[in-house]
Length: 280
Image (tube, rainbow, N blue to C red; front, side):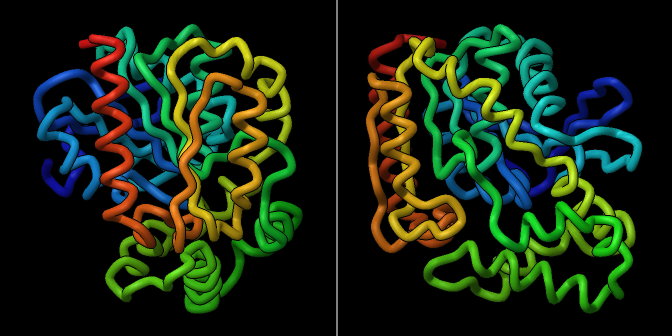
């Protein structure tokens, strides 16, 4: 899969950049915040050997449009994801979601008639309360943070993102994660997406989790300080048929902290889920 997202999908004035690669049953990845599809790319490339893999950037993130007047909250993203699956012609893909991509996938499934062959939730935003102290500070003062000098803004974003890793980030990884949020458009988009975050979008669907019938697997970094690992067991309690795997020595950026272990677990899970479902 090329490093760039070469395809576009237009939805209510927004432009969604996406791409697909590989052959086999459909497998869709969802990123979270403040990330983009780039975080999933190495694992997606590996799984493209046995699946047709779809990567996409949500509006307000990565290579997709960042129009200031467009809402980028979880409500919008869930509705958009259901429309994107329809655009792709995917009736029941396998889905792997990280961070608030989990809430997006869950809202599409529970509120917008999406259906999955299987659902893997990785360190996801799904249960209240959520949001770090910095996240909540920005949410309450987004208009002030938007005015930070660029160098101070970059330093704040670098520090914030670095805190998501348990093992520490290499310079190239940190640069990849920070760059989309630099420049006037990127800086404004960074604070805008935090300002629009609202726990009501997850509390609305929490009572519905038990109605999910698809196979569900929950993966969590044991050292996640952004969304502690006890949420994995809380989420399983809400979805009794789900299975759980904790990955040691991994924080919230599990794709970087434990790339090999996560890749192996996702290869195992998707292979077993596909064998059980026979979905194409």
